[in-house]
Amino acid sequence: MKFTLFKLIGLVLVTSAAASPVGNDESVVRDAILEPSSDFSIIKGRAPSSSANYIIYPKANAVKKDVEAFTKSLQSQAGKTKVDTLTDVNGKLLAWYATLSASQVATINKNTIIGSVAPDAPLKTQVKPSGISKRALKTDKKAQPELQMFSTAPGKKASGYTYDEKAGQGVTIYVLDEGFNLKHKEFTSSPGTKRWIFSKGASGENDPDGHGSCCASKALGSTVGVAPKANLVAVKLQLTSWSLLKAWQAVVLDVQQNRLQGKAVVSNSKASVGWTVDRNEKWFRDALEILLKNLEALDVVVVSSSGNFGNHIDVSTYPSLFADRTPIIVTGAVDNKGHLALFSQGGPLVTTTAPGVAVKCAAMSGTSAYQAGEGSTGTSFSTPAVAGLAAYFLSLDSLRPRLQVPGSVAKNVKALIQEHHYARVSGGPKVAWNAQTLLRN
Image (cartoon, rainbow, N blue to C red; front, top):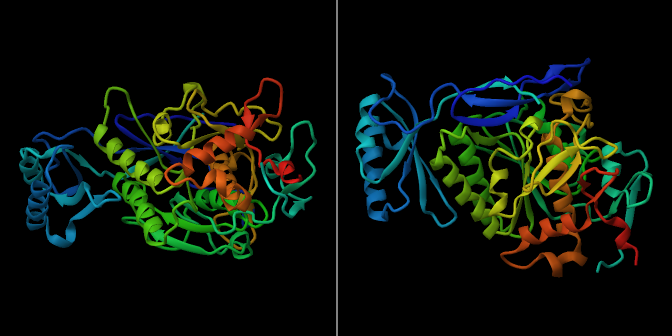
């Protein structure tokens, strides 16, 4: 496996590079790292001479009347229709977004309620290195090896993918990514509902690189997904800081509006965020953490990738770094035998692992093409599979008393996954298991 790393200073968005063709209608994707083309530090009287897009963060102690007054002032300066806002589950303002000139930025930086003004610069894609009641069970003897691992019991050999017939039914999986090919048969032939959410700047029902299609299919695809009856919300975002924050906010609002508390899972592996140690860009991080805690309070399970920088050893990106204070399920990757993938980051924050090497998944275009091999390798693809497992567990009626405790659903699902995962090879990491044999009383 060939990996290359490019480093810049400041905020980092970990995602995937453009797909490269394999065959007539197949494609592969490579994991990548994205970084802003400009400095993401606090601006004090130094802004570009021309207008640019900025994210403005209020100080934590800013009072409501001052925030409202600043909002009106900003709308007056930038134009009411040109100002966007980010709020938490209770409507508290976390940030503003506006197109500003250098002089406007300088003025805003003097306001006593403002903590940071940061450019929302375009991002550059750069390839990176490296007690259960009995229910009816189904077995797919032709399932892919990585899927069979999810149902292989301790001490047994893989013999297909065996799972409860609920298979995620009634649970919604939100997948955050740059695009999706929902015309693929993995989605059109699965019974769950499919719908879109477009974050700031995102549009078009398409997939530019195959990453999102692959991820969504590993979660709930009809033949390659762990929870083939789950519902899908395809959250399409642009690779900018603001679009990412707005995507998380959109999930919070959608869960509320559709009353999906205790019945939703978020899979995030496209856009993980990291900072170099000397930058410590706390404003973006704090806003993201608030939204994640909103989801926890709404009893939504969040699954995030551990990262593919194996040379870093421990988890080094957000939101996975929040796992020490939120019940995020951080997922690493193994091969189809259960050996830890060389690129997979580990450490105490990792919850579990799942197959993420050369997995088979839906391609970026067409209705029946698949991608597999090096291009569909990474924690990006083990993560949605574990999101599918979380949805699978949430769909089981027999687990409701244990899992559906208001305020603790995410924590309970995480504990259940850790209770049943086990190592497949001597000295290997623990790999997620659906515990299907426990359904046979």
